[in-house]
Image 1 (cartoon, rainbow, N blue to C red):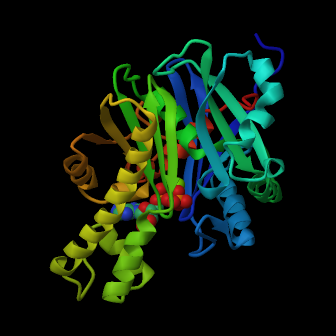
Image 2 (image 1 turned 90 degrees about the vertical axis):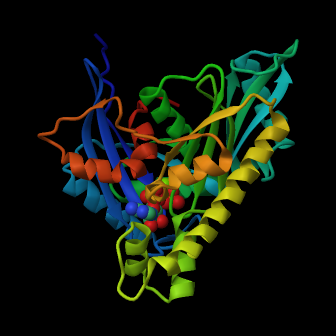
Length: 353
Ligand SMILES: Nc1ncnc2c1ncn2[C@@H]1O[C@H](COP(=O)(O)OP(=O)(O)OP(=O)(O)O)[C@@H](O)[C@H]1O
Ligand SMILES: [Mg+2]
């Protein structure tokens, strides 16, 4: 028995298109779902990785917490994009304590921001591919303080306690770890394609070996549809999800969807190229897809064909116990592609770093 009860934690993923919330409890079988919700932000509340309309975001958080009757206060949230740098570096062998003392000095040459403007964190990796005598692999993480302060103040103003500020790609990894068996022989690619951002985390033996965020997502497809066909937001959302819109034919849509796919292909290829520049040629065996844009019909097959590898839509609730009397399972299936990051966040413990 523990003297101090671990506090309940809620995962909160503040995306460009919507806010996601989730809460888990430890159960005899592993984890059980306690709460899950999603709420769309007003259009333009977040744009190009920037918080434009703070009040709308705070309001949406308050509303979703109330609608879901959530009483827990501690929040794990995450950030990604331009304010985050994740780099795998080689350093001389040293203890965690020694590294803690010298990390600022070591990081300086790898971080393109002023070192005083970032919060630094690191993890010594034990999954090095090419072990070199006297060296170790370190995952270096730098996040702009400004961005953390932004998120912390929003969560606080919404009446909650910002306990954990994580990174999107690590939350994805956390979700993968719970739901999938580690592949010990191949690189596995976690890929979340949202509205504005594409988060990639390449794993070796289930641990991060490479990450990259790109500013590309479903909004790029919407823009193409809006510009070429003169449609509004509601109409483009319909077309994206495969519904018909009066006056728009499938023949008109096909080339536009193709050109969106081209954008995605080249951005993914760019990430693979960066990765290959630092890695050996062990194959990338599989892409596990998440994010709302992974809901585009057959996008998994299109990617599989283009990159000649297995592509699977990931299921963040795969191993999570769900009470069908408490949750609308049709709704959960609808939103589950968008919930990968928030599930990873909800699995964090308050006393995690
Ligand atoms: N059925 C669907 N078919 C195609 N696209 C869809 C579908 N449902 C949602 N989307 C798209 O998914 C995107 C939203 O996905 P998601 O919720 O993962 O993004 P986000 O987390 O809010 O944003 P980001 O992570 O980029 O900041 C939107 O561009 C939306 O149009
Ligand atoms: Mg997202």
